[in-house]
Length: 95
Image (cartoon, rainbow, N blue to C red; front, side, top):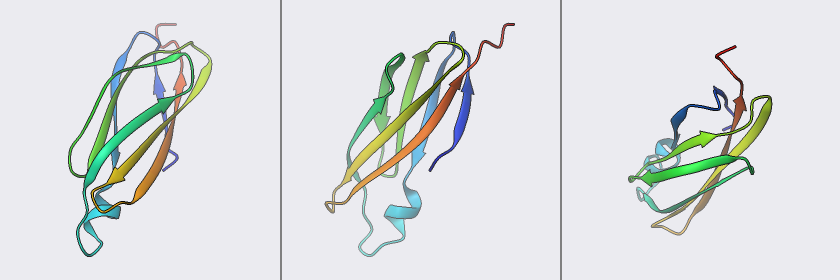
């Protein structure tokens, strides 16, 4: 996953990382046990949560004109470790 999203510095937005394809297609079916997010300095993780197949992070802040990487690492009940990243371009949309 290497999607890029736009965000205003004043917005607080949620971003979802879906692992449905990786977890439900295998045999046996697997699910998320733990989820951790890391972000480039300057962007703030306000909160995060997960269910069996999706991890969600709420992000705020950032500096206009700066690009940030957000990485989610999960460990599954079956012992797999999977990592996905997205990119956030912070742009001042009020201008």
